[in-house]
Length: 262
Image (tube, rainbow, N blue to C red; front, side, top):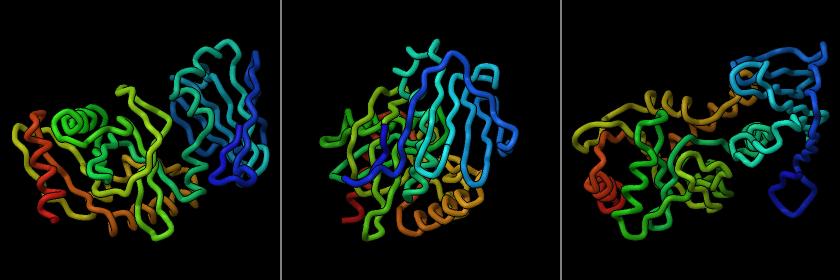
């Protein structure tokens, strides 16, 4: 398996190994990060991850960088059927690490397109991101959802931000491969009426640090990620929108973003 941006030698090559038992982490790898579902180890700038469900005892895969651009993935043969689950397969690739090196970052959002431009609804799980995107798709002619869970943010040659499709659908089941310029990032909040909530840049920066995937255990990746967020805020419209689940929520936001700008 290869990861490449153009028709040239791959930036990253992956080799999958189906094994009966995951390899142990050797002593010269140093633990740098740990959560119930992942352990991250580092050695001379390379990374190794033990990936599981609820604890290291539940690990189903080991991601190991043998050298820059070469990754071995060891996966339990007994769990092979679960590779059909997009989140399981993608977890084995550690793609956010590769994308950061190529200048892209993953945003947790519902990615909706209107008039050829991306409107990205972001916020904590369960806040109503996919619901708002769905309201647009159902009630606003020409609006549709590209991905209900994530997008990949990148900058084009002109320095403009673009939203790209991502191969994880989430609960919405919607994920398409499309790229569109970003019109706005909208942080969703639930409220009985529809109103824009004034927030300063510092608050939007804080919100983005929780919704953009950054490997904070890696100093270089952290610096790159925070710089990316800062530049994103300087160039892309970011707002907080308190809204209900009525069609009027979409119409109010459309007028605010598109009609008032004309």
